[in-house]
Structure formats: C-alpha cells, structure tokens
Image (tube, rainbow over all chains, first blue to last red):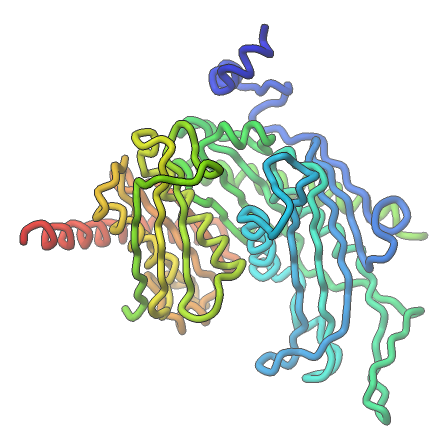
Length: 280
Length: 185
C-alpha cells in the first residue's frame, strides 16, 4: 500500500516522513549517506591514468581520472599550467540523461568544478609550470558519473580531490642542446595540493526545511538546492545556489555550519585512505 | 555603469512535445555572449538564471507552454550576472507574465584590504579577493540565488549579504521608476 501511495502522491509521502524529522531511507535530516572512496591504481580504477579515484555516496557513483600532458603555456600567462575539468553524465547513469552532446547539467557541473578549483586555489597553476614560457603541465580531469542518485556535486568534488592526491607527476627536464623535453618516468613526485575543498549539498523543501545529501528523488521533489564548498580553514570557497526558493541569511548560516562539520569528516576519511595505500 | 544586457521575453507560447511539462510552463533561458559562441560558462549562468526565474514565475497558470528568455550581452564592464538578472526581471515584468515576486541582482566585491565594494567594475573585480553575486527577492529580501568567485570567510559573506540586501532597496526603487515612466505615457 505504501508503494502505491509513494507513486501516486510522492510529495505527500515525503511530507509525512519530514514531519517526523526523518527520511524514507531511515536517515535523519542532517545525515549523510555511507561514503566510500577507492584511490589509486591497485584497488580501484584506471591503470592508464596518472591519478584516479572512485567515490560512492550511497548509490551515487562517480569516478575521476586525471591525465597529465605537456603543452606550451599561454602567451599572456607564461608561468601557468592548465587544469581542465570535464564532468560527463552518460546516459547509463540515469534515464534522465540522453546520449549526445553534453546537456546543461553536465556543463553547469563542469563549470562548478572549474570554479571550485580556481576559488579554493587547490592547485596553483604556477606549480604546474616546468619552464617559463616553454613547457607546462596540463591536467585533464575527467569526472564521469556511473550511477546518478542525487548529490552529484559533492561526489564529484570529493572524487576530484582524491584523484589529485593520487597523481604522481614524472620529472621533466629540458635538454639544453636539442631544446626538447625529456620525461623521466622513474622519478615521480606527487602534486602539491594546497587546499582541500569539500562540497556539501542541501535540498530545500517547502521553503523551510533543509535536508542534507539529497537522493535523486528528493532533488526532484525539492524546490531548490544549495551547495557550500569549504576548505580546511573554514573559509568559503563557493556558495552555489542556482535559484529555487528564497532562503534567509540565518538558514544559510545553518548550512555553512553543517558544511564545516562535514569537511572534518571527509578530511579524516581521505587521510585514512591515503595512509592505507602509501607503501611503507 | 557601462555593462548592458538586452533581454527579450517570448511567451507563453506553444512548445515542442518533448519539452512540454504537464503541470507548468517550461522556462528556457538563452544567454549569448558579446563575442564567440556560448560556452560552458554561459550554460551554467543560463541554468542559474532559469532556476531563479522558475522560482518567481507562476508557471502553474500556463501548463504545457514555453516561456523563452533571450539575453544578449551588449557590453561587459563588470557585474555582468547582476545586470542579466535585472534585465531578466524587467523583461518578465514588461511581458506581463504572472510573477509571485520580483528579484534583483547585486554584486559585491571584497577588496584586498577587506572592504566591501558594491557593483564593481571589471577592474575592481579582477583586483578583488572575492566577488559574490546575489539575487535578492522583493518582499522579505530573502536570498534567491548566490554565486561566489574566490574564497572568503563566513563573516565576510554574511556582511556582503547584508550589504546586498540593503542595496536591493535602491534597485527596486529603480524598477518602480522605470515602470512608472513606461506606463504613465
């Protein structure tokens, strides 16, 4: 009987749970789904990529692969490398996405990730430069969603962070006589990651209620979303609220406080995983 | 200042079967930059504008129809997103679409010394530590949309939000003057 009610009147079904301050899958309003992360070549993902990570947030599965290539830096910023994030939502992850050119959601997500990298100064582009004006690294970060069950942005940011921590860049020297670059694959050094941004997403329900880590169903029923990205100093890297029901400043402050707590949990998880894969 | 955006609103009009929604109007926003083809940045801005407009337009009164909002950037001298938001709201008002409230766009820039600058020029935006854009609703001045560029502390953000809410009053007064002029002819 409850399944019929759920299909016919999903909003009413949800409201009944929200009145009791919990959700159909048993979570509290401020509780995240179980987060698992797999980093690196051996326990996870992509053996051909320079860095990779797989993140599961409940059912939402996102994989990130980072490939490093060499290129000449742009004329106006001769000492900066490039980071190119790309978020893909293939049609296999959810029936709402069609195959073909990237839809609006994928493009907006790619722009969001680019903004987070830029705002948080996670990777400073000057660090990617090898020789001023001649050679720099280009990091292609491909984030692909394998299973979409809401909260794409949180999982993507987490996957990106984990993959970048895993990247090992080979040392490159420029041969003085020939002017060509020589890549030494034996000598690898990890990327310098200055800040660790973590995203926390909320869905707004009925103008007042805020729930954390929405599933796909909750996102559809909700009337708006807010995503807050914090770094370890408690600074806001990004407040992303693309329209939806209006919020007061106080509600936003609640979101920010929750985001800061979430940051600590995620940081602990990443540190634990990195420690477990580094060879002793 | 020198930033100008042209907004055109078409609708409610007929729409293709694939795009129509059974219970409300489908809103579509197209943002065309001054030079070049629309890219990923435009798409993300379009999504933000669309969701902001969806929150105010009473779509339930026009089911299975489409409202198209086309924005053309004529010149960009800073605070482009707020300019687009204001143009969009005035366009919707002029078209006579049923709205549950108005909104206005305000941009704040945090200078390197911590000062808050309202409505920054392109130069001020580049020098700023962080640039925050808000869409503030009329009525109770609640936050409809927020985007940040650069990082800032929580207190600074709350400060900018408070400043933006006060500035929204000036913008709404401007809306009133415009409309008064338009309809008094």
